[in-house]
Image 1 (tube, rainbow, N blue to C red):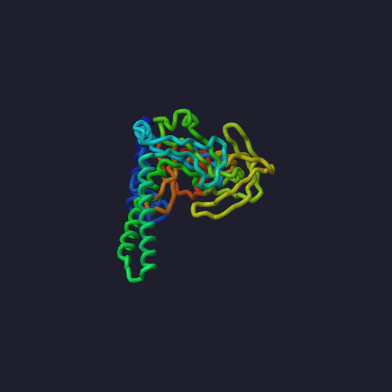
Image 2: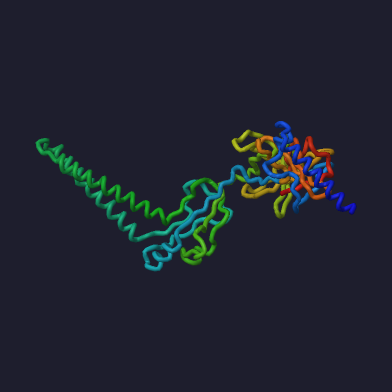
Length: 348
């Protein structure tokens, strides 16, 4: 009997609340915050407790050599195989080894195509013959000014122009089988069996020479949008899978995507390979005695400006509560006003 009375009392309270809502109470903050659904509906929720205390967090930056450029030198392996097998190509050699420094324009590797060489030689000989004939006509005209060979000279010059274009095309084809260093740098990988196998390269890939345009200056940089008070001279610990380095922040520049940070080793003379990838873990300043929630719990009201959370009471009903939010740290949002800690929130 007592249970029935309690249930009737609860129903009466809910009906009373509904009548108050229907009678209209003005566009106050609560009405603005509540979405177009019953905030008191009882259902199963994904729950989380509002936390209060010190909030600690960290983030990571991935640093790369600021002067590091990787250049992959490639040749189509199928074309090489076919031409070598047919005798149309001869392997001249690979002229570099791993760790070797090279200058821009240095020949790294080459093949010779007899067919292309013969074509180039034919065009060169034809141009030379035409030039000899042009000189002969000019000499005749010099000896006897009544003679006019200007038409023949123009025709031969036109032929030479066409053959020079053919010669350029042949040279482009020949350069498909020659690899020159695009920049100064260090050879970081060579398919070492290429000389042993007479120019044949493996089927699995076509990058058989990799060069790093790297000076080994140990200057590393990263662009970040992290809200952290970086200061020149700050020292951080950066790690690889094998080593730990002490790096000093030496430059800060504004970038379209955030701040560009430049780091160098604390100890002078320390050389870190410029193609090394470093991971730098930074602890944010601890926020003392703050109220914070899972960011998934923060919802927007219908006005798209007001933020709210759904607090779940002891009976399993959720109520919309307007909150003022602060900083977002990792997946946690600081609550400046509206919660005190310990409340149960619905994340759905």
